[in-house]
Amino acid sequence: MKFRRSGRLVDMTNYLLQHPHELVPLTYFSERYQSAKSSISEDLGIIKQTFESQGIGSLNTVAGAAGGVRFAPGVNKQDAMEEIGRLCSIMANPDRLLPGGYLYLTDILGDPVLVNRIGRLFAAVFSDRKIDVIATVATKGIPLAYAAANYLSVPVVIVRRDSKVTEGSTVSINYVSGSSKRIQTMVLAKRSLKEGSNVLIIDDFMKAGGTINGVISLLEEFQANVAGIGVLVESEGAEERLVDEYISMVKLTDVDTKEKQIHVIEGNYFQFLKEQGEK
Amino acid sequence: MKFRRSGRLVDMTNYLLQHPHELVPLTYFSERYQSAKSSISEDLGIIKQTFESQGIGSLNTVAGAAGGVRFAPGVNKQDAMEEIGRLCSIMANPDRLLPGGYLYLTDILGDPVLVNRIGRLFAAVFSDRKIDVIATVATKGIPLAYAAANYLSVPVVIVRRDSKVTEGSTVSINYVSGSSKRIQTMVLAKRSLKEGSNVLIIDDFMKAGGTINGVISLLEEFQANVAGIGVLVESEGAEERLVDEYISMVKLTDVDTKEKQIHVIEGNYFQFLKEQGEK
Image (tube, rainbow over all chains, first blue to last red):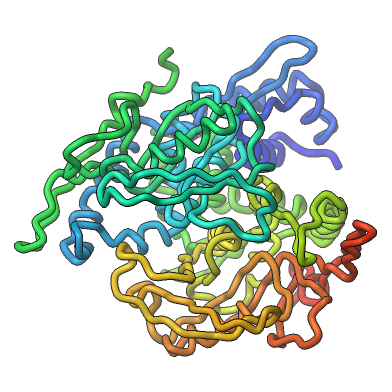
């Protein structure tokens, strides 16, 4: 099938968006559209300019025989700030308050549009780290982990509280939860993670950090490296933080269960976000 | 910011892909690009043609003052057949066999690219039903449910085995599992589902259908309607099927745990898939 430039631009845009972080050889496109490589290069120039001016992401050309083009989803800072500002106001709704100072996040985590935007923010801030896989803890972290994994193009492994027959053999650890100080169990299917993997940990909520600390201990059993930690909400209420370096989108600074007031501010996200094109 | 046609095509393609099943007024695009509506209409014509010829989906124009354009992700039958064929051969690998005739699917469900493709197939086959929300059961169905929800642009609710403080008040039911005949519990957060919702149930695996039957009973407590049931794998081993109408991608017809052989064929998916443009 022969394509005009306009049709190529539409189809290439779709293709690149569906294959983030994948090196696509120019010959792939020139065969797909039966067009000269020089035309494909011009097309990519147009796409690159639009992607970068609109904050869709960056398009990098790798020269040489093994070369091609790679799309890395990104965000511009302005959009990210609006997004996180919006999250803060959604979360500050006092109806979210649950016993124990927890927040009801189920509706937020159930909205694929919001979840995707959060995943994109995670992917943008972690995009220059070496990540082989994303780990999360069942159940609430799962949608966020997949959304980020989509944009980073890496697989997801899910740490569970209990082992299931459908997981095959598992590795388990006991750990002490940060806030309740109780002993809890975590398991991960043996087959699901290769030794020495670089793992990004994604979760929805971090109080003292006991759960994430548990995940780190479990990852040690697989000789895995922690490439980063990202949480949607961090809560300031914890006396002692068990986890050092992490990136949070929003921060719960004050929860008044009596007065039914929640105070939510921006997390530390922008301390880590590089501007597009910045090195 | 003023756009040329080429830049508009790239940005509009991205915008439409990010907003499936949403009615976008033409004025939105003409303001976004400071271009005449007639130019926008021509752009949309080019995008429509490419989307439909490449099996990306359909683009429908709604005329009138409240009109606009709506993108519905689709698949062409050829791609869907290749996709499901590929799934069959991935699943027939005897290393997947677990005690009890279960299959190890964790790697498949952990691959966001595969999961997205499966989600897109679900979205395509259910695209003309009225769906307000997708329900799934923790943990394995979650990624499939979100992938489909993304393409259908509806929220996800997650049915759990146990209630958690972060869910607020919940509704729970007891049900009898189809294969083990044991009594089990299922819970759903009260706030998570509006009365009278049209619910698509998505899960990874169905044997006798006890779990899905449990979800149906739970949904009855919310006066919800079941708009459809989609499973990735159905297993033929069950003596008695508890669920009538469902759509499956692949079917496990024979599991020989002694000989370590798995026989996987196409499910009933293509009995339900309409060709693009077909009514």
